Each structure stands twice: as structure tokens, then as C-alpha cells.
Amino acid sequence: MASFHEYIVEYREQMKKGAVQKTYRGLMEYVMSLRTYFQGKYPDYFVSGSIYFGYMDMTYFAISPKSLKERGLKIALVFIHDTFRFEAWLAGANRKTQKKYWKLLKESAWDKYHLVPAAKGVDAILEHVVAYNPDFINLDALTVQIDRETSRFTRDVEDFLANRSI
Image 1 (cartoon, rainbow, N blue to C red):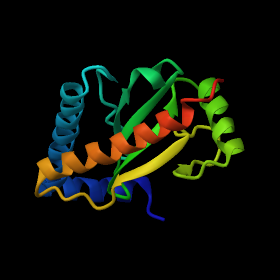
Image 2: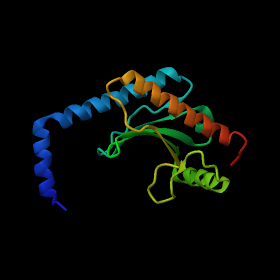
Image 3: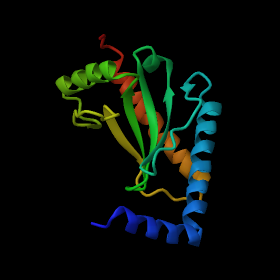
């Protein structure tokens, strides 16, 4: 394992090349445009006013249709940097809500989406990959794909919860 100093030396070299900064900036601009897209297309949804830019581990923003927001739930649209993919996560507004809905899903044996193992510090209840290997050549097509998959995930979760009270 390399030392912190060795990582800093490598980081400095990569920063001199300039590709990391340009790539990161372009990726963050795309995520910002994606957030704006969801705000415009789904005016009845709550779309978070900010983006979590992370520590180059994940970058995300939240969207919540009324039916989920009323339950203290949200959909996080997440870019995972190390796997280089977009995911939609069902998440709670707080740990108590998250635990309650995780238990409901676990006990229901609903297996349409991946139930994230319960662990301290985990931010998701369910996760669904919406773009495995995103094609950044055609950003419009990528946006449509992310929208389609995120909308399907959201509808499926809403349908599952429709007749369940907690």
C-alpha cells in the first residue's frame, strides 16, 4: 500500500496533465444539467436545490414525487465514481425512516430491486443501476436513459408502497 505522500506525488502528476480537472468539471456540469432536466420535466417533484459533489466517491442529488416525500422517502440519483455508473437509490429522509422502510421491504420479500444490506452509515434502502457504462458521447441519449430507468424505478416503488401503510 502506498503512503499518503506517494499518493500526493501521483496526484500532483495527474493534476499537471490536466485531464482529471477537465473530466471532473465536465462530469459535474453534466450532473448539474441532469438535475435541471429533472426539475423541468417533473415540476411536481421536489428536486433538491443542491448537489452533493462528494469526495470523488459519489455525486448525487435527490428527487421526490409527492407520494414518496409524504412518507419521508426520496430517490437519490447517484454517480458512483469507482464503478463509473449511475444508480437510483431509494433512501429515507433520516435513519429512522430508512430503517422502517428497509424492514418493510425485507419482510415483504419484494425482490424486484437490490435491497441494500443493513449497515451503519449506508445511505440506500434499494438500489437500481440506471446506466452501467454511460456513453458520454451522446449526452441527450444518456439523459433519456437515466430518466427512463429512474422513472421506472420510482413508479415500481410507488406501486409497491401504494397499498401499504407504515
